[in-house]
Amino acid sequence: MPTPSSPYSFGLEKNVANFAALSPLGFIERAASVFPDYPAVVHQQTRRSWSETYRRCRQLAGALHGRGIGKGDTVAVMAPNIPAMFEVHFGVPMAGAVLNALNIRLDAEALAFILQHAEAKVVIVDREFSGVIERALNMLEHRPLVIDIDDPYFEGGHLIGECDYEALLAEGSDGYVWQMPDDEWDAISLNYTSGTTGNPKGVVYHHRGAYLNAMSNIVSWNMGQHPVYLWTLPMFHCNGWCFPWSVAAAAGVNLCLRHVRDDAIYTAIREEKVSHFCGAPIVLNMLNNASAELKAGIDHAVNVMTAGAAPPAAVIQNMEAMGFTVTHVYGLTETYGPSVVCEWHDAWNDRGQDEIARLKARQGVRAPMLDGLMVANPDTLEPVPRDGQTMGEIFMRGNLVMKGYLKNPSTTEASFVGGWFHSGDLAVWHPDGYIEIKDRSKDIIISGGENISSIEVEDVLYRHPQVMEAAVVAKDDEKWGEVPCAFVTLKEAADISEADIIAFCRDNMAHFKVPKCVIFGSLPKTSTGKIQKFVLRERVSL
Image (cartoon, rainbow, N blue to C red; front, side, top):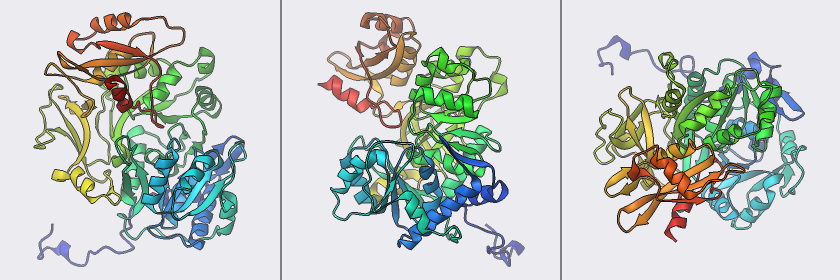
């Protein structure tokens, strides 16, 4: 910092000519100004340009303002990946309000808790989810303003609101003059964690972090100008990993997708020339196992970004065998989605396919806008050796870390002890600086005093040609304390036994890591495709 005697200390102050708060809201104004007629949103037969989309966002902001919604008010939205869901990412914060995109898989009780905790003043709901929202609203003391999204391409549900979304927009002027935030630290959105152990926590994002992660996405993925982005990733999940703002910054095309199905994805890729899409490993696995007929006719470059659960190397390898380029990222709700990326080095191109897949399955290094990343002892915060073997917890710091948990100061403080965000994920640090997750701290299996990574065992299971999905959890054992138990979903028409799976594992890993039991059937998942291991742990404890 300059000393008082420094010539740089005087007369060089911030003012409106040389400083502006960072906010992703400016991205859509630029896209509409520079590329007004370029396509912005595609939803079946509906196609809108960037100027049209920006006009609708201003109308939404103006309408909310006219309804008395302003700074610090929460606007909740329950909708799939349709145009309105994209528009609220701009229109709501343009009114100064905070966007709370609701998980469409939650039950009424969880939704009621969130709406009450967030003090939602408005709930915008697509008619597909009107039933569950109506039940949630009946549990509240005070009913917020309810607005229906009446999507003409969806049949079902019913209308429960005061008016529909289009009527609300008609209340607002397309000349509404919105203001950038005075302070980039202001909240822009609120996202709730899954709440698998107790009530979900409300994660607060600020404008600065949203801006920087949106740009970080573009840089780390080489998105360039005018990408054609397919919305397979839910926009309610970490605000779509900040990609609504990324696509606006790149003046790309938002291809909307109400339901994530293999036929719809392949049709969109083929017909709309999709250049980029994101998805959890479960989505990639679904695409890998689609029919050859669905996969046919794709002859252009397609970039895939995956995260959410540590993807087995076999899943990445199979996607790349189809000609897709996979980028593996890692992050949490608390870090705006992806904040770590497995950057690729050209020197690795001549490695064998198995080695390439293994390298790409690592979580990687800090993304361009993340300030700090380390693997360290969770008690002392001493970094672990970069030997690829010593396990520690992943810690992050910087602009891509949340403001904190809403109305939860003690948990916020605990998560930031030592000046780092504590992820709860266990990893090793490789000599080249890349981190590799081995497990959640609660998922590690301790058998006879030895740590067993459930992810490592799952990676072997996914290599079996008849295995569709796999998850491994600890099962109590009288002799060893804990042993691995595998839950496996087989591919259609597969014919294989528990003994066959165990024998395959024995041939491909240290014997003490081999599952001692195998249970066949479907796996419970969250709305973002993560396997719910806590449910599996409950099953083996019965």
